[in-house]
Amino acid sequence: MKEWIEFWDKENVVDEKVWEENAKLFFSNTLKVWSYDKDDIVLDIGCGKGYFAELIAEKVKELHLVDTSENCITHCKEKLKHLDNVFFHKLCEKDYTNLKFLNIKFTKIICLSVIQYFRNFKEVEELIMQCEKISADQGQLLIADIPLYANPLYDAYSLVNRGVRLGTLRQTINFLLRTTFGEYSKIRKKVGITKFCPKHFKSYLDNKGLEHEIHFKITTFDSVSRFNLLIKFNKIRLQKRIPKNDHLRKSFH
Image 1 (cartoon, helix red, strand yellow):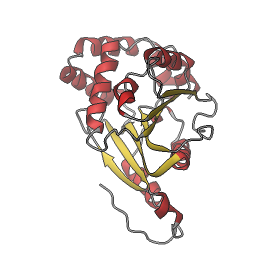
Image 2: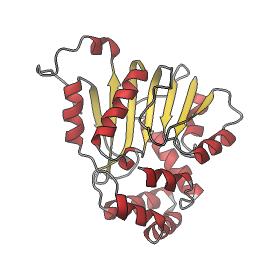
Image 3: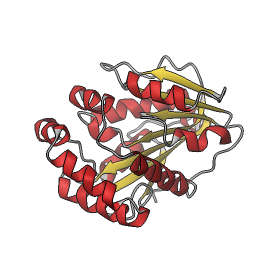
Image 4: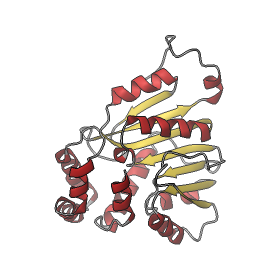
């Protein structure tokens, strides 16, 4: 994770238009799974430079942005300085799943295009548990843009397809060239990215008694490269959990 943290802290390979159009796509597609309301307190884990944040900031009561990158936090502060309902938090680079410092109950938590840089599924489990602790009753967690494969060819296909649809093909091709022959490719070859299986998440969340849904086509236009996980925290029901070895009835979409 250290290598990826350092890379994204100084990232300059993605054109601003690509960031903006992808943020708009994600925002539009999240409306299929939830809405943004005036009483929402939202946490954006791995907020980056705030392209998505600026789309929802004025729609919610509070927006809290966290990132390991001081550079990204600085960008967000400048971009959203006119708003008094946006708060900024620096994540510890060595303990990036630790959210205990957030003494707030969130109605919605977003983690977009982050967990592929985690070392293993255990770290994702820790993130989910941390989110459960800071979630309000009936709060929801959306982990988005989860890779199904570690093969860069799938990513390239998805990116080009998205670039055509969003009108950012030229910028996307430029990004692919710069990453293929640049630092991104070197890091990916060295440490890779982590791929995930929807069935693995289902097994884990069923065992925890957490309601969840799998969604496709939220960050992409295809169903072959990435998927998205929506977890719903029902605090009252969770307090009445029966032992995990007992059989529970769950819904999985």
